Structures are given as structure tokens and as C-alpha cells.
Amino acid sequence: MSSKKKILAGVVGAGALVFVGALAYALIPTDTRDIGPGQQVAAGSAEEKQLIEAGRYVAVASDCIACHTAGNGKQYAGGRGIESPIGTMYATNITPDKNTGIGNYSLNDFDRAVRHGIKPGGGTLYPSMPYPSYAKMSDQDLRALYVYFMKGVAPVAAENRASDIPWPLSIRWPLSIWRKQFAPEVAPINAGKYADANIARGAYLVQSLGHCGSCHTPRSATMSELALDESGPEYLSGGPLIDGWLAVNLRGDKVGGMGDWSQKDIVDTLKSARNSHTAVVGGPMNDVVSHSTQHMTDADLNAMAAYLKTLPATGKTKSTFAANDTTAKELFVGIEKNRGAQLYLDNCAACHRTDGKSNRIVFPALPGNPTVLSDDPTSLIRVVLAGSRLPSTKTAPSDLGMPGFAWRLSDDETAQLVTFVRQSWGNNAAAATASDVKKVRGSIDEQELKAGNVTSLEEMRKITGAEQKVH
Image 1: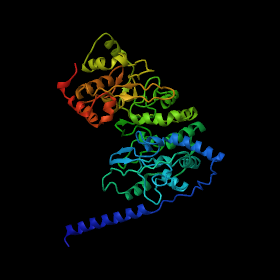
Image 2: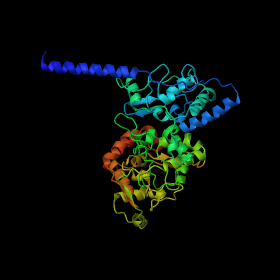
Image 3: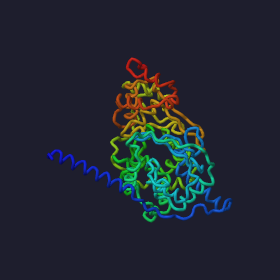
Image 4: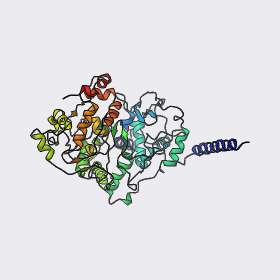
């Protein structure tokens, strides 16, 4: 046999051994302990009623409805698409329907799925189900959640939809390797390492039930979160694009983070999607506030805020901010130094005013705004193009919105406007480019455009060149 053939045979043999070894590793059963009976609760008893209500609150804090309910669909019947780098996954039916839902799950089946990521009968769930976070869920909350879904949710017959992930990425057994490599052991949070019980409660809500790190923590090349709690400096330091919007930095950075936010600012945002100087932008966080955090107790929201305020700054933000009224004075007297200033006066000043501060209670201020100063301008570009709307909440029922300007601004104009906002009133962030805008524009779907008052994608595509500029 020639040397080349020997090498090739060796490579193939080694590959086969790796494959067999990986497959064997994936098939090793995960040790999951029996957490006790789940259905031995007397129907209609006080205990069952208490568990249902406790489980309802756990479901709210965990925001189960946001993923497991499709638009205009029945609650928890699944079908909502969840985008990922490898394709679209669809949330499953988690109502107690015995044929299409989880009606045949025992408590231990439920536990294995929620905290371990394992389907009944084996097989690993995609980590879009945040079981690495739910691994810290207490036995008490897990049991209450189970009773709620079995006794407090109406069964819905709705077939589950297969993912759009192409073969071979759709093969499931490699997920078992991922789970065993990156998912943590199921264990309660160590409350003793926090300064007091309130911060410990906040850590539990943020790290486990709220699974905030699933969106707000950056991920490795293997798609695992770089940290699952504050022991890693990457935890909650800002995540990837979620439905086209950047998951922001929740740590103590004064620029691009929440270093200048008070505990009340955080609580107000979780209750109403806005505070006295900024607002939530983008659908994903709107869903969190609408379905989850606005319905939580003030005590729990304050605990979450107290925990978040303990997280130090990353120190990695390149943008800076030092309040400066030069831009406001120039715009007020009609001085337009560049095209970005002209576009701001034509399109934005009516609401955000020449000082960029609006009246703050109605529209968010632009000076020092974390979204404006993010090192990545994607979210600001997106809100200029497609607009955004705040959710209607119990404490702030007006669903205030910003229209989209994709229909009237070219890529170059949008870039100049965004750059002006990022470099005025003391803001100092990198310029946006026309290519940045083109990329974001291409990712906006029909539904978002209609929300921003654009008739169709075709209409938007016609308005992208210099010949369509609005002067």
C-alpha cells in the first residue's frame, strides 16, 4: 500500500473511531434522579389549587407563552418559529393534550425535558429550549409548573411542526454530545454566595426562570453561552441578534450598558418597557415585558434589578458619552452642519426635539441612550428603517410607536442620519455605513415594513438608490 493510501486509510479509520466514540458517548444515558410523584395531588384540593397558582406564576416568570404560542394561536399550543443560525425551529405544543401535547408526561418526564433537555424515551431537545438555565430551577417550582400545565392549562389538539433545519444538521444524536459537554448539572442556585436573600432571589430569577442569559450573553462557536452566571465576565454582556434586534448589555457599563440606570429604572422598564430616559425597542423584549415581567410582583422585579446592579462593567465598550449641548444650540437656530443634521430636522426633531431629549416620558431621549451608543448600530438602523412600537402595559397602556422611514430614506441617507444621532449631544460612537444599512434593510420582513407604514418589500426596494433621495 502506498504512503498516501496508508495516510488516507488512517484518516478514514480515525474518523470512524471518532464517529463511533461520539455516538457511543451520545447514547450513554444521563443520570436524572427521580424527584417524586407528580400526580398524587387530590383533584380540586387546596393543595392542587395552590400548586396551580404557584405554577402559573413560574410560567409567567419563565415566559413560556412567548415561545410556545404562535401569533394569533391558542395559548401554549406551539407552532411559533424560532430562528437560529442553522435554520428555523418550531416550538412544541405544551398543553396537556394526550396526543399532540404533554398530557402523557409524568413529573419525571417533565423534569427531564425542562431541566435536562431530554425528551421522553430519549433524544435531546434543541437548546432553543433554555434548559441550561432551567437546570437551576428548584424542585418546588418545577413541580408547581408541572401541576399548572397538567391541571391549569386547557388541552389543545395541535400537531407539532418539524423544524426547517436541513440534513445533516437536523440529525439529533450530536445534540446529546452538545448537551453533555455544555449543559450544566441540574442543581439549585447557591444562595449563600450572594450578599443577601433579596439579591439571591434576583439571581435565581435572572439566571434560571427568566433565562436572561439565553439572549443577553454572547455565545461561542459551538453556540453555548460563554457564562451562565456572574462568575464569568461575559455573562449578560450583550448577546447576538434576536429577530434582527441586538440583545443589549445588561452589566454596569455606563455607556452601552446599565451603569447609569438606577434600580428604579430597571424595575420601570420591566413593568412598562420604558423608564424616564429610554425605552425598549424591538419585538423580542416587547414580548418579555408583555407576557412576563409586567405580571411579576414588585418584590421580584426589585430583586432582579438589585442583582443586575451588582454586575460590574465589562470595560469593553468603545463608544463614549459626555453631555454636550452644542448640537442642540446649533439645531435650534437652524445651523445644519451636514446632511445628517438636515435629515434629523426633517424626520426626527418633531418628536425627539432639537436637544434629542423629547420629553422623555413619551419618547426616549437620544443623548447617552444605550441603543444609540451600542458599538453595533444594527438596532438603531432597524428602528429608523422599520420603526418600533412599545407594548401596552398595565402601568403604561399607550402603545406609543415610531414609524419606519425605509420608504423615504436611501441607504446612504439612513447611514448619515444614524451617524448624526450617534455623534451628537455628546454621543461618540462609530459611524454607520451604507453597507450596514443595506444589510439590515435586506433582513426586514413584510410584517415589520407594514408596521412601519411601508406597503410592500417591492416598494421598499425601489427606494434604495441615490436617485430616490429626499431633500
